[in-house]
Image (cartoon, rainbow, N blue to C red; front, side, top):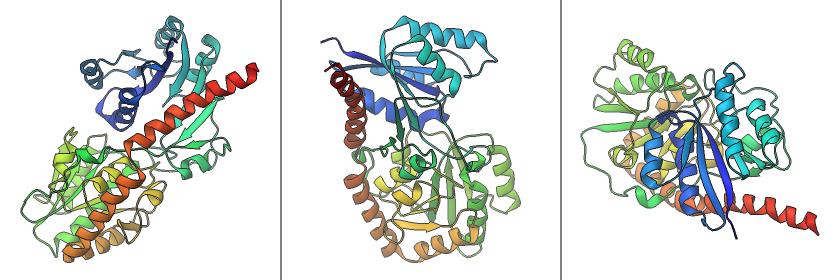
Length: 358
């Protein structure tokens, strides 16, 4: 039997797209190649393409922003669709034009994955949301599925290979708080800086490490200086060695205004870290308040500082929450479950096709 061809469509091959890229990469390496032949299309180029080449995974970059303002980019995408007999187009980005081209130019099933519900630029969750026509909608949390009001939506939580994250903590000086995210408004990092500034008045050896890049880096660096945090905050930039970095942290904090799920928080749990996160979006489905960490109302630096202070003063609590978080990551969010559920969605499309044939 000839394997069915699946085209995974991602927005960018820059490090900003790493979280979604890692999930797709895991699927590609787990799938039975005799059933599905998966290729990746990036709308915009970047260094992640090289990683795929090293793994022997086929990928294409069409250099298109997904809008009608760039007809040449749209033409390149259309040519890609015509070049192969794809059975499934699995979109992780794009709107009606991207979906429309898939419908017009191929007989493929359209699968749409949703990874967020809030604007990255503002952190605001729209009151209503509509999506282009598709055959299956996959949401990365129940709250994202509910937001788009599709009764057929399938919730598939991101998974993680916990074995990549060492259990042992790396020796270091002082108390290290860490976070990993894109430096964009939706991530609420200004509130984290304010919380650390309050903590630094009591704990002089506290340090905040921020792994990530984004449009707000310069303004966040300026704000940290204005808050008197010079020497207390380190901007690490994009890092592809997060398991090693997290081994040197004591507490993980995610102050997002909203999150579809919060993959970095799951990674922190796998690393055995207690997680202090906003009570927002899919984080409420990931972090067990009072067990694997704490949930704090969004945009609340005082609440962040209060919970962090309790953990700083209580090593036993930190360790217990870290152990509970790692166990939860192992039991509830294994990488194998995510890949198996995604493949089951693909299989279900063709099962319906066979039933219709009868």
